Image (cartoon, rainbow, N blue to C red):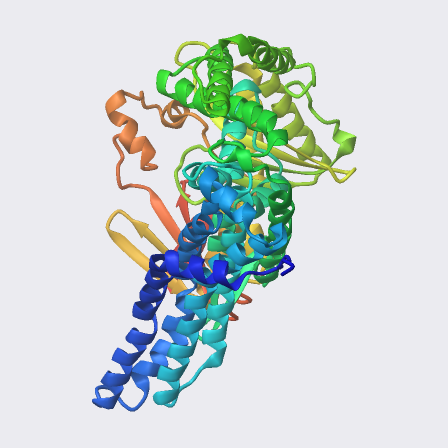
Length: 607
């Protein structure tokens, strides 16, 4: 009798489901408890007439069911891994691998049989839960297929992706315990690398702010646990919407599409997989160098940064820590690959890693890219956003937040930026005050240039920072008045307090107070900041002692606590995401120089 080859083996498929029944049974039990049984409890409450016919079950169908998308994402991560470990388990022992290879089934058939068995373990309980929950809702007369279908779609998308992702990773290893390790690492690798690299660059580069926004968006996509968790949003009581990277609904098709590509990649790897790789940490020979040098570089960055933070090391200490940990990571990876501790003869690779890192440190340390000294030309800047420069009095405008396009304002920001660059190799004087600020340039070419500095307030730097901070346009934007006007907000109320007295005005009277505030800001009589605590006290002739710092932090002058007039303005705005009105409040410390504001308050109080 002539033998043949098959593309699918029902016996292998059934044996997989029977052998690993605890996985899919546990998955089904969890979902049965979360949805159908909970629905039955609500149905019993409705039958007892506790709160009107159908009220409890309707609440369950409309609110509880779509809210289960977050547990579905978590369970998809967990059971996707467990099912993948079951599907790939025959590859991790030489006996089982040889047995499967001896069957009259093509490699494609073996892959399909094991892969589909694992997929049933993930998606089968979801489909069964959908049917059971629909029957419960139908029995109660409030079947809502919209929320139930949305939950099923989100749960299947999550489970399908994480299972396929785990199977793909399973093709690269021949060790059962290596699969969950790789799975956990690669689910968070992009986010971890971004965080470590960003922290290291902030330490190594004077003025480094953050990686570009597109890098952060890419990291969200490459970190599916974070991406799907943040992307699943409850849009309304009866629908589930998915938003990721600003595109609603994209996650429901992007990740399943990625799962299909990962499945195809896993099949290609399975067809070429060597049976003798069972037991190896990395089963694909071409990936062994990637694993070795990847562990070296990522381990060096991660543990180098951790060591630097724990020991409070300098920039040089950070470089040395990264270098030493990278060499250690290289040899550890080699030990895992060779299954031996005798790896010291592989020293040439460690030298190569050291030379690459040393070259990178030379580029950074010598600023060969010109990053630290770059200040754009005024004619190249379309607009600049400045944040920080925090100073007293401490109210809603204490922290600067302004976008400027006037040439004079841009020139002032550039001058302050140049002062910050000049301080990169200058030690500040003892007791000198510092202030942090961020600048973000929108260049006419369309490029973005962003920097963040801690500025020592000495000499010209202090004068320039003070002048820029007290620019009327900066003050107006820092309080939020410019944004209120742009959004078409209407003043709702004005409330002011002095010592123990409080008064409130509405409508036209509140508008009168607001007009006085705006007039004082434009005239330089209100909103002015002192960027050092000492300057705030000295302006009223008071010496600052350590015991007075808490009073300065509260926005008061030592010795005169409770004597400041504080004004509270509240706006009503429309056009919120859900179409409802909302309110925004601003608190202002009113000095004696704010003559227009004080006159408006007196006029309102006089009636």
